[in-house]
Image (tube, rainbow, N blue to C red; front, top):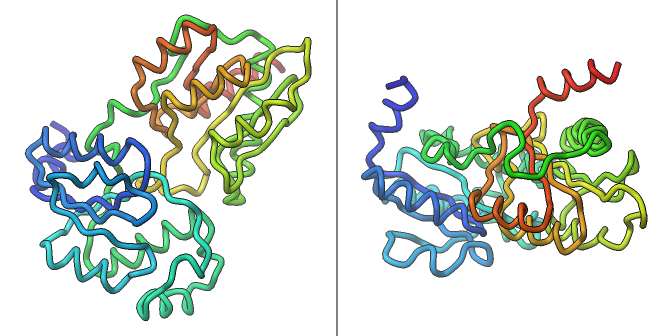
Length: 292
């Protein structure tokens, strides 16, 4: 058993700061399977009502910093995970309490960016003595593996778009804009911004060139991303949206992204001739060498 596994085994109670989507429910189930008691701080208008059924919890908002810290300490939480999707907030929608106002006065409104906000929240909680973990520490089987994940393989033309899209996705991620980009024959059809990946796919569905190689989605982790916060995530909905948009495939950054309900999602992709591939920095570099 690794030191990391021993550390996880020693955790008896885990605080889950829960946003939307399926990932928080999966983390709750993983905790229960490992005899870890979950406690949920569920973000209003983000987390699903069904998530907290039968689980110790409180509903809250991200701007209620003092309340959130008090709740975590009152429930004897030492270890925490941020998990699930959260809509990028405005300062008005955050409705910051005195603790949050003090925080924003110190760090500035630049922290309202996706990565900056989550990193700043983590930093504040760590100052209070909480230990942050990534959801993958409790369910690493959800991480995207490297290689072609189904029966459909990308063509050489698709691989060229994957290489270019991989670098461009990292570039927009470095600017804290988004994690995804859609490519077609070397042309950028769209980049992810505040709308999210699934909305991006729907938005650019009519932009593709007819009679050409079908477009692809490339989704990567932001270079500066704290791997314990907000890893890129796809699931069945993303696969279905890509199928509906008549895309050729999806490339994900292997070991740096979550692929939820993978077996069902891959079966669906196979049925509709959509490729899904996990790629790494090393694999992209090797492909570039071959092209050179």
